[in-house]
Image (cartoon, rainbow, N blue to C red; front, side):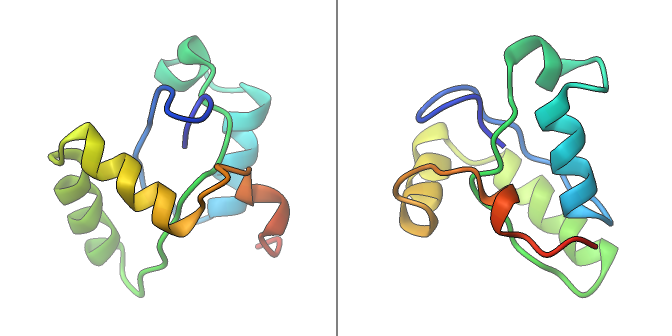
Length: 89
């Protein structure tokens, strides 16, 4: 999730990406994302298990910011909000 192109980034995992991304977009949960205006889904990966998703989240959180931005740029060069492209879960 991002606030804007090259803005504040947030990394997390969830069982329902469309629901969680919509919660971020609407700012319904207080916390980091609401405070920093992180509302745009700019990158995601799908995993078969929660353990796999959690391991990837932990790994990417340790990356340098430049590496995270490079990952987003390769997947979504326009930094468009991908929530609108997701199938509802």
